[in-house]
Length: 434
Image (cartoon, rainbow, N blue to C red; front, side):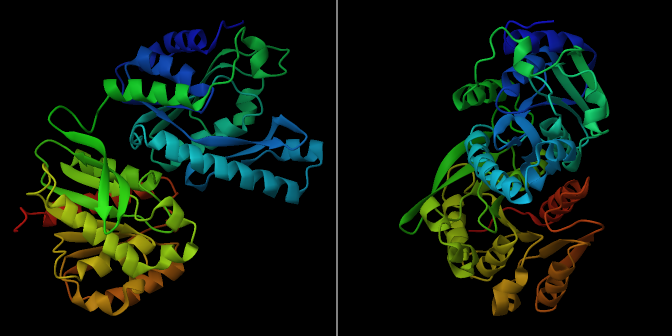
């Protein structure tokens, strides 16, 4: 079987997957070549489209041969069979991984700026690529979907080697492939047109899909890129406010993360479904992020959050809404530092895997109801949260998510964080008094 191009392959694959139409499905395309295929599948199934960011780790002297893959949320897959066969050293592998990690972060910023992360929690995730060769990138993508709470994972590709089921190692619940030829050398040999896909084509696919599917933000809602003034600095952000929102939550990212953080976007989408708005914005500029010390300058980060709070209280559409703070890592300390300021008046504060201890003596001045959420396997941070909780004088609670590590990568753990944050904010949000 040969395909004219990726679009034709996607249409054929969409017809094969017709049995999924009408189910709660999210289609995840692997950038870059898998996204045009996935866009056609999403059209066929009338399902939302998102990207699942992965990068192949190519053998240094033969980059088309994958010795592994990395993905969002810290996912890493290594193909030991290829490593043994090529003799690639641990140092060479580390260099390739470092380079590909930088590319992954750049693309995350580019693609996540086009459309918000689509939640797969409790849904069927259809992972789509233009083909499978070694299977490393496909395995990484399936693991990402699993970690984000997908109830079922279907890996669907136009072409793959005959033994691709063995290569996938059980990472998918179901495998769908149009052709598994005996003589397989590379995915490109089965396409008449296998031209490289560029970032502009990927973002165009995402924009078209986003315009058709807005599951969390519908008519009468706000979902737009914004610029938040902070002193003499202007910070990029995304403001999402469902119709009839009961409040808006400002996110304080931590450890150099940005408004494109996939974990915070996941939580934000859960808040949208509960009728809460969100502001995800960059606490630091690109130039400021280059100085690692700024990531731990809690006073600076808290000041930026206070400025964003003031902006929300003047912005049309949010000026009458109660404001909450959601902080992660060092951003949690910034949220509590800011909450202690008399001008802040947040309705509630939630910390995810945070470092509230870095707020120091400010903790005793916090009056907003505060929820601290920590992974049960994140032992050091859990101890620091218990110490910080002892200093709080406001209504507070410490919730431990069993088995979760610092990044809440384990299946179902980030979903649990989202539920806890949703319930805390909805229980404590009330019309703002200004």
